[in-house]
Image 1 (cartoon, rainbow, N blue to C red):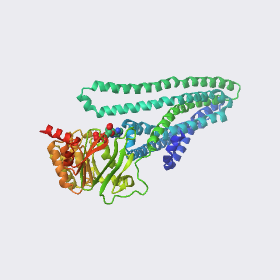
Image 2: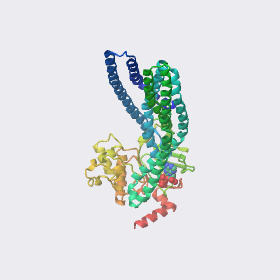
Image 3: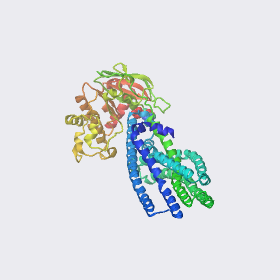
Image 4: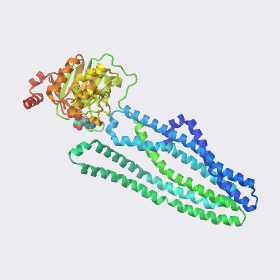
Length: 578
Ligand code: ADP
């Protein structure tokens, strides 16, 4: 548990003044809880001895009315503060978490599913916030109330009576704590099952169109139902456990009441305590019920907080493999890229995806990359995005290893259009501006012209201001591709990478875009990964990749002369086109 508060230490440090005020308020609140029982006991004694006067009765009633009013004021101030703190902490934790997610390299996203990452910033974050607010409150409030009540019982009523009726309770709390400790495992399993369910629900929502198209709603729902059932079952285990052990306290409490009354009456008869004392004592006993129940439930929350803390901190403590070195270099005058003996393996894979790759791209050149699906074309080219570090060899920019440059500098050099288009639920122009938020109207115009997206605007209800649906649902496949290309071009990058980004456009549009690239991007570098050879035919160099290796390279004419894979595939494609 200490670890939880260590993790949150920065927040307590930052908010120590408010936490001090809250602590004082809590102590006042808990002290005020014991006042009425004391007043009633004294009144009863005064009545039984005949000492009660009109004035003292009036004073007593006034106090009994005033105490709750004053208590309400403190209670209100306390809850205002604690709720405010809770929200502030949630906000700051979310900020830290999201910042971390943005900072992390792709390895993290290979390791954790979306569901897992979301569960950590919702469920786990929630129990961490609880740990810093209501859990802390319950520990302090109930703990101090217990001490005040038992202290008053011992000091002002009877040590013997307290020992007889109250000792039974800590024994029960002790036993329950031990059992709950064993339950930690079950709680942990439940978290994993919950994440899995979240992931499946997300996947189903994202894939709803595909599922519907294949009339697989029933099937998909059954799979989802399995995950829902597993969640309920594991939850049921927890609830069953709590149901069995929850009422234990009521039982123990009745024993405590019985002992207090029986032994208390005995003490009254033997004049060791007064009737008023006995009444005050039983009222105290009643007041103890709440704190004890809360304190026993606290172990449950502490369990949650410990697990959540481990899960949340696991992400926050992750270190990126891809990070800036001390004193990174800046790219001043980009000239060329060299792949030298580059070999790469994905972090959680056993086999190399690309092997011993060597080639050079000079500024102003257009490079085509072709090869069968899964040959490693994307992997090869994505090395320029600094998502992962290369496993062996090095990529050089202007004869300096890519790792020695500022990561942002390298990424700023590149405009990347991925195979799968990521479009946001924003307006078309906002989607384009992600490439370069500073771009003006002329830049946008130029980008949509080059990407041949201009012709699409006429079909969009509000032109550039049209809202794009989630994952680009309101656009056709070709439109999504052209929009993604426009986003990369608006950046006017030194290196434009089209990673199989022309697959959904027709041959004419492809030709238009390729011609636009030649016209508008002279002097700049283009890397075009394509399945259709027409897209790369005019490139300065074409690399043919197969099973992670370059098997042929050269211009179109050189490759045709080689009579190899390129020529065979090229002829196949052109004869199909005829
Ligand atoms: P291409 O672009 O030529 O189709 P890719 O570079 O996408 O090929 O993929 C090459 C190989 O690497 C494939 O076998 C693919 O399954 C594997 N691969 C791609 N991305 C990942 C990844 N993120 N983690 C593990 N393996 C991957």
